[in-house]
Image (tube, rainbow, N blue to C red):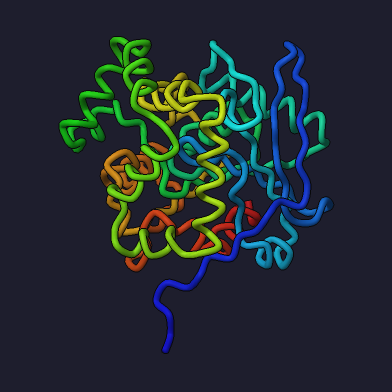
Length: 294
C-alpha cells in the first residue's frame, strides 16, 4: 500500500565548523552535499540549531551545497545582545565571504523566513525561497487576521520587546517548543515530523538550540514579531513563496503568504493543497529546482 506520508530522508551533516567573527563571536555551521555545488543557505525554524538538513539524495542529484547556521545564541554560536534581523544577515555575509560562497541563495523555513527576507533585502543573497514562513505579523493586512493570543505577542514586540523576551525565556525550553509545535501542527504534519529519521534530527536541533538556555530563541521570536527593519516592497532580488493548505500554525502566515506575495510584486507563490508546514521536506526537489533557476 502507498504510504501517504513517506519518511523524510535526512541525515548527519557532511561537514561542520565554526567561524570567528571580527568582534570575537563564534558562528557555528553545518553543510551537506558536494562542496563544489551551488550554495544554498537554510535559515532554520524556531529554536533550531543547524542539525536538521534536507534529503541528501536530492542535494546530491541537484548538486546543492546546503549550509545551515546556528543563529547567535542558538547551538554553538555565541550570543549577541544586539541581535537584529540585519545583524544576522551581516553575520551570514561574513560567513559567505570567509567560505567563498558566491551566488548564495537562501531558504527560510518558519521563523527563519524573516531572516531569509533580511538577507534578500540586504542583497546578501541572489534569491530566496520562503517556505511555511512567518509573515510580518504586524502588517495591517496580516494583523487583523491573527488570533488574539498571537496579536497580544505582536503588540508586546512593538511596545515592550524586552518584557516579551523575558516572558518567553521564563517558559521556553526544547521540550516546551516540541509540545507547542505538535499542538500547532495538523495531523499530516505530525505524521511527517514524528517519523524517523526526521524526528531524531528535529529533536537534536531543538536540544542543541536551547543548550545555552532560552535567551537566543526568545530574542529571535521578539525580533521576528516586531516591525521588520526593511520594507518588503523594496526587495528586488527574486523571492518564491511556498505554503501548504494544511499548515495551521498561527505564527506562520494567516493567509498562507497571499499578502506577502502581493507585497513582493506578485512573487511566485504556491499553496500545496496536499501539504502542511512540512512542505520544505515533502517537496524539496521542486523548491530547490525553482530556487536554482533564479
